[in-house]
Amino acid sequence: MEIQEALSKLDALQRKMIAYNHALGLIDYDGATAAPAGAAANRTETLALLSEESYKLSTSPETVELLDFLHENSAALDETHRRIVGNMYDEMNDMRRVPMAEYVEYQRLNAQSQDAWHQAKEKDDYALFKPYLEKMIAANRQLMRYMKPDLPTYDALLDRYEKGLTRERCDAFFDTVRQELVPLIHAVNAAPQVDDSCLFGHFPIAEQRKLSDYLMDVMKLDRAHVGIAETEHPFTTAFTKYDVRITTHYHENNFSYSMYSVIHEGGHALYDAHPADELAYTVLGCGVSMSIHESQSRFYENIIGRSRGYIRLIAPKLRELFPSLAEVSDEALYRALNKAMPSLVRTEADELTYCLHILIRYELEQKLFDGQLSVDDLPAEWNRLYREYLGIEVPTDREGVLQDMHWSGGLFGYFPSYALGSAYGAQMLHVMKQTVDVDGALAAGDLSPINGWLEEHIWKYGGLYDPGVLLEKALGAPFDPQYYVRYLRDKYTELYGL
Ligand SMILES: [Zn+2]
Image 1 (cartoon, rainbow, N blue to C red):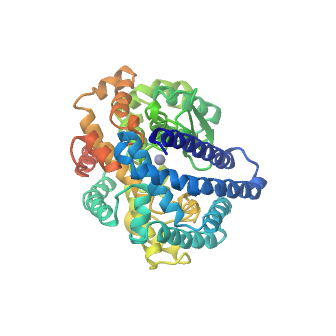
Image 2 (image 1 turned 60 degrees about the vertical axis):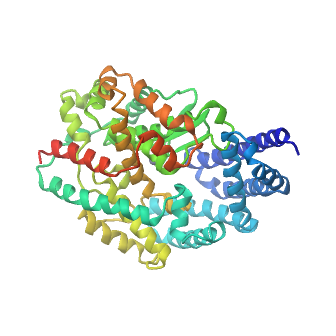
Image 3 (image 1 turned 180 degrees about the vertical axis):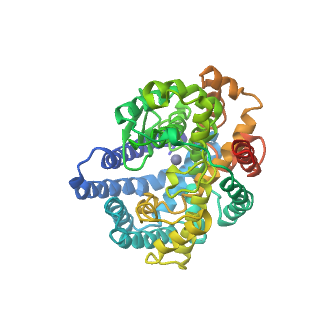
């Protein structure tokens, strides 16, 4: 085989894989948005069949021969193709170690587990989900044994979402967070509380939908390529950079929950929509890791979306849509939208206490995978940790252990990326401000300079570099969690007059 011939086969293979992923992703997305409740079993069968085809494609003798050849000749490839081949070669070998029947069975279990979680959460009945959770933990333990036999299971799970991340590095990060932020949270709790009553009332969903459109415009999301729908749990999915979907969940009694979901998912969507065009139909045409993804979504949600400048920018629109805010000042809105108080639900948590929600999940996951905690004891342990770290009682499993969809879909080891992403974002702001007038951009109502910096340093690279390499290139220095700690300390010291 000649190199040129192999590269055109590689191109065709990637396009086919992306088409399979498009179909699988769309069926999944449909299940969460529009499909009638009784369609779940049918969907599960379709997903299992397509997953089988997708598995066969990525492990077929032709694929193995092609990737073996290109891997052997990687010195003759340009940087982008070397990276594509390296990633596909590793992935293929990971996949080949998993027996096909087990892989297909896992896809089926995954769909059933998500369906059971939906029902369990709706009925506030953990017992409906428990057997599936147990099977998902066992299945993921087995998958990691096949795929990454040299790594301890929980390290293997962390590595899946952030290449190179280990429990040791996570522990070091969470130790800093625990030491520095827990005293700050205690000081905030002891200070006079901010009044956020203006956020509560009646906010018609029709008006909130208009707000979503407006927020997406402010972020400069191209609506020709980014859609929005409504789901129980907000998420973003990208089929290619040209077709990105975000979802939100409206609460009629408080507009801010959906508002920050839209800004958060919008941050993911900006990243998904902006890898360089030449990466679009390659395996590098998406975000490189979950924590870099979360650094973008949480940067927009909190660092931009909860800043004084941003709230001043959108306040006139809020007053136009919601008459109850007519007399509320910009500063009162800023304070209300930044109120910090221990709460039950992660996705509705404030910027300061948020990382404790992650810390709790991080500790529980390790115990579940180390065999120190059974699924029977999980709800009680969940509730105990909320009491210990956040000082609150969990009244129902729906607001406790059943609140997140992650574990039902096998996303173990994913949660730390939310906290790491937040910390990456704080350091990005520091570096961005050296060349971009962030406050000026917000005052002018034109976020292009902010998007421009993110596109130049993060988005356009897609999956071209490992997350650690990309981050250090963007920051011009190694990652340092002190930027995150300092950002939160400065913000909340001022807000609460500490
Ligand atoms: Zn996210």
